[in-house]
Length: 105
Image: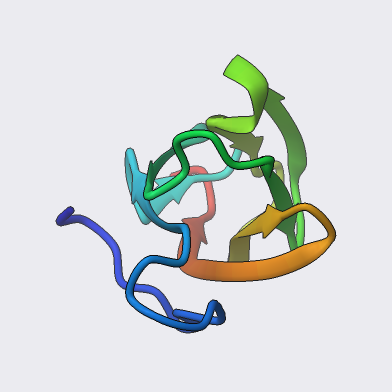
């Protein structure tokens, strides 16, 4: 998927390990705006997988069982939004997106 690049990848072992991609609605926005992040997974059928989201700032909410995250960034700055994919208790993949928030003009 285009639109973002992961910093951390492929923690699972083997080609058949569950994996994911994160798409960001934007990576550059104005303070007060909301960025939406969408998670797509591969090789998860029949597996106990869950996504956990983290953000270095802003107000984070999730929807659709963790497949969608929204972050409202109130202050200008550089932020990291990370999705981690777990199979059971084991982290099998992670992807981090850099977000730049500009001041209100």
